[in-house]
Length: 365
Image (cartoon, rainbow, N blue to C red; front, top):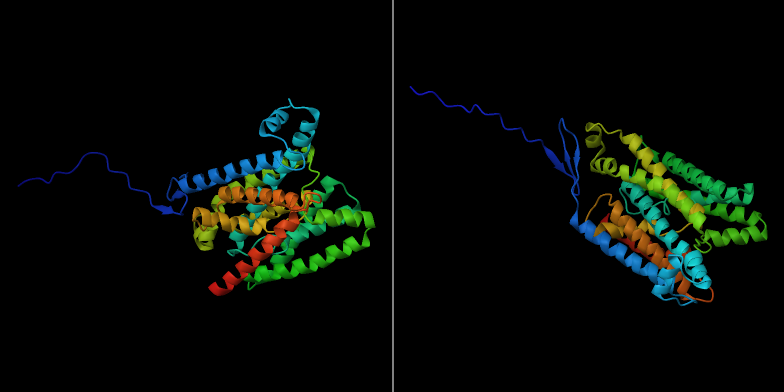
């Protein structure tokens, strides 16, 4: 009779189940910690996009009515150029270029947040009325209350949040908000707010109405270093919060029951996402006026470049920065004697894109 041999060594650890969400691996079990996986395609796409943005930025700084070489521009940026070159490069062009890059990032991130919340590529803040609401709040502060730049930013944020609350309340049906209904309600609210904006400008003085009209077209001219640093400080906080929300929003996109089962507070995540998305849009609107198309198109272009269906903040930010800077460079050089506001260029391009997106959505449904 032989005894059965048994292993006396330590038992092999039981493998923890994992769920693959496409770009990250999450370990589900007692040790619930994210294991970050770097996506090579996203890194390559971001590297190419930022390289193109840097090259375009140098072109914007060196070209124009005053032709400046790259070496002269670099010398002026380091504070060793002559007075004329320093004034053109460091005081006029560089703040404008950096502001275009920064606000392109903000608008693209805001569009990505709302498109993920609604589950629809048309769910962009410039389509569903949040940007128009921010414009309304800024106009009330500027033309009615006579507030300064800080008060205008606060008014734009308040107007965007109030508009978002109104759109979400009107979109609720049977205790839930549907993406298509939210978009339709948002378009209607945006149309009404647009009429209110026109009325506010008509009741103002001629000088104030002209300034508000130029600002309302989306204009990056006249950006100064103090303004850029202020916007950079505020936007850094919003963008950091958006980065922290990336993982919870990916869980929510998979399914609310699944996210709830993992212990996530879905309602709190959604409210925080709305506040951050509106804040990013309101910041851009209060700084240079409403700029359309960037928040609508940048997330969709980024998703097609990296082949993902989720929240790709890095590639989206890179696409948004490149798009807004390209639109501003184009606006300045279409008619050099009378440069156009950047918002006019983005609206012209965005109208064609919006029409194509509507036709595509109609065919898929």
